[in-house]
Image (cartoon, rainbow, N blue to C red; front, side, top):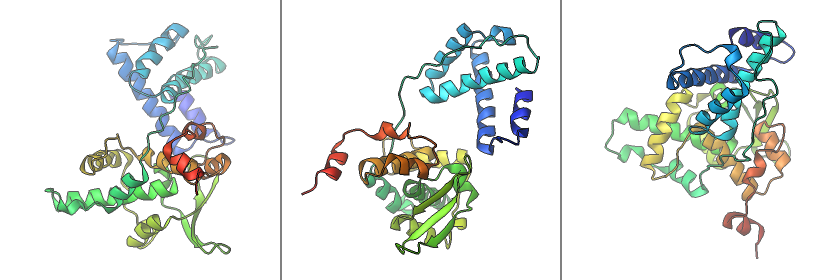
Amino acid sequence: FRAYYDYKSANKRKPICDRTKESYWRYKRNLEKYLVDCKIKRLYADQMTHEWAEKYLNWLFEQYENDYSNNNVQLCKSVLQYAEDTALIAHSPMRGFKFYDKNEYDTTHLSREEVIRIASFDFTTLPIHPLTAQSLREEADCFVVTCFTAQHHTDLHELGFELYVHPEDRRMWIQDLRNKTQTPYKLPVHPIALTIIEKYGEFKNLPVKSNTKRNILLKQIASHCNIPKQLTTKIGRKTFTNYAVNTVRMRFETIAAILGHKTTKFIKHYAKITEESIAAEYKF
């Protein structure tokens, strides 16, 4: 794993971003948890067969969604293939292993009413410490901005975005490069998001905390705002996607460009016939 990680990190033709590096280590930790659960003290490369991979996948499926589980096992497969290519092992026992796509995608998102509820909730009315109320308000603000601008946590954490008045439509726009893909990102700023940004003076002043801290606060926010959903930083992007697909009716290609995706594969999961989408299309 260390050799593979160093190889990928030093690859100048196709460098991996910090987010991907973090994912590698997270997948490695998941594997270590699996070995502990199975009471396996030492795992050798030639033991990581197709049968082993299936058992590991089943363990992952009990806790995570399909794509995330596949990504964990794919890293094992890639590491073994690298080991074979560099003669660390004679043959990768996972060569030819096929992944099963359940064609499932977690589209959990917030309704427009739920987003507004979070944006307007007064945490100072709760019987909690004032500093706790302040932390909840700050995270609520950052999360609502994400719901309207489709920011990934790593992008929001960088705070390198530029606000400018579009020369043609005269609205305030936001632009930068996506952290992971380095693709251009441009989008008009929704008035609610713009109000929050102006509250802190400018975009770079948004009080963005670590991803772990944010997810802890978001669960508290969901509880206080009576939202029966497992809130995470990713839900903000999913909320934007659902709104763009089913309410605004934007083209999939446009949404993919905004999200920094290279294809519309995941966006299509949101294109379901709902009362919201019917109301948006059938107007009189």
